[in-house]
Length: 407
Image (tube, rainbow, N blue to C red; front, side):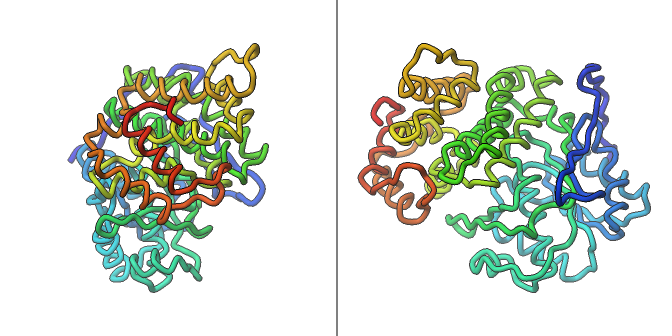
């Protein structure tokens, strides 16, 4: 298979690449951001001491030639590479088990995750089970990691999940989603190349972009929020509000792709410091009733989660409204917060994402069961407003109808 060609010309003001490093992140660790930075993966892998690499990716990346592009750059530096190219869009334990078998049979010393959140999550899990002598389901059930993982490089090809800078990962067993986090799951190095997102179709651009918005908005609303993480979240929200429509409807807009990649990374750094709220809980619930991409699940539920929290965090939601370009100077805090709910709802609708469960094809008779699962299986202690079973049902009813005014 021929390698992918990166044959675009970035505008002059976007050509600068940079490495983000801070306290505790010593070279060669860090985040490499910029167009064409994918072509430095071999150099970075060698700096990390890699010799035998397992590249975890999906069939789309293989078909587009990106997997071969990465493999070729690694081999130029003398590294041996094996490709696992069968990560499914919402990965199941069977995928994790297949990777587990590979890393138990061969002595890999570096894991590279290439793709969307699913590939990067599977790379994280693989790096952990390789050294901790636990099968994937056992690890994710017990949520215990005692030994450092294999070193890893994560390379996103979407601008939404932010998994490249997160310690969390998700996998499904049957209809249930299992998620956990570990400091050992952080990558030593992330390569964020906006050029890799140019191949995303509009629907995936929109759903992953709204996923990033949910990371930033939930971080701001979280009880654990603080000014350090708030500034990152607000930065992410500003960029998403300005560039998501452009990226969705003109996928070759290099400036929009550049800033959406940056927004995704900023938003997840923020949420890693705080945590997810009910938008993420609801996304897990919806996937148990029909196949739903994670970003779509988070997106359809985000404005309803915001509306539910409005009475107790008016000023925080007002920050979101201002970050999205709304003029709130003459509005009372509650009105400004309500404007944020409406603006998020409108952005989701504008990029052709669903804003109700009804339009997604969910049955009204399942609403009660969904609410029950959400509040009992995926509660959120750090949501700023406590939620009762009755309030959770009311939220699902409003979401099914598509009426944020009901909350």
